Image (cartoon, rainbow, N blue to C red):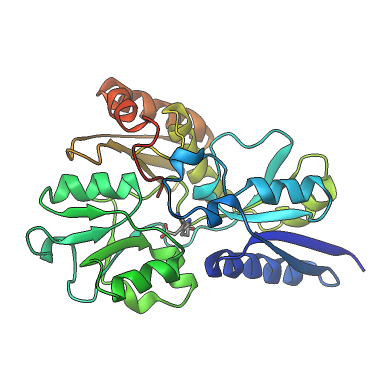
Length: 314
Ligand SMILES: NCc1[nH]cc(CCC(=O)O)c1CC(=O)O
């Protein structure tokens, strides 16, 4: 019998996503045995310092990629929004699964949305992208760092450390916390991280057998959308510690992309949007990035990109 070993982080969300992929692969390939290889990564262990400061890029992937190189696992499952814009050489993404809810969630035990928060309320998020959008909408809010996995973050909210927090709807829904979503923060007023809500499978590029097994889970419309979002982020230099948001959607044959670059400090932000044929996803991403740069996005990114300035990612 053929066996496929999936390397995964150990957080509840990572395990859920890997189990989800394992079940889909078993259903697609009767007779295939699929097992999980849970691993710790540096990104999971370092919770007290800014991830950006310790070299944010790919922190959650490195150990899983080493396991694939050592032959201890065949593939790895990731939240695509945590995957660097430039994949490590020697690796490919044979499948990007159909996107779940792309939106951010407003979570609070007392308030129903951002506009209901009292003056000076404390909102927790480690994401510069979320901080920038909060600050643009409500400059009076006090933004506080919030780290840890989804369960940990909800625990800190419940302990009274924050009036509200912002998380991804997809992660909450996957873990059964739908009922905690008090408001969906939706486009066009609020934009998600590039590729938020999409799960990707990674494998070695010299392992076509694994790639072929995984590729049955690929969802072409999702791939098209996230290609545009990631191309935009890449063109902006998009490491993960800049406040960049992007959301693409297909309307028939046309692909629409909205992008935002903001400041987590003064609420200043620039936005752009454009559309193209679905075949030109990458070109569309680059065009929207250029439109953002034309409006001064470069200075916003440079201002946030100094080492040690702060938290990371979305
Ligand atoms: N930054 C961590 C992370 N990576 C992916 C998700 C959610 C699931 C997804 O976007 O697919 C989360 C949690 C969050 O942002 O609330």
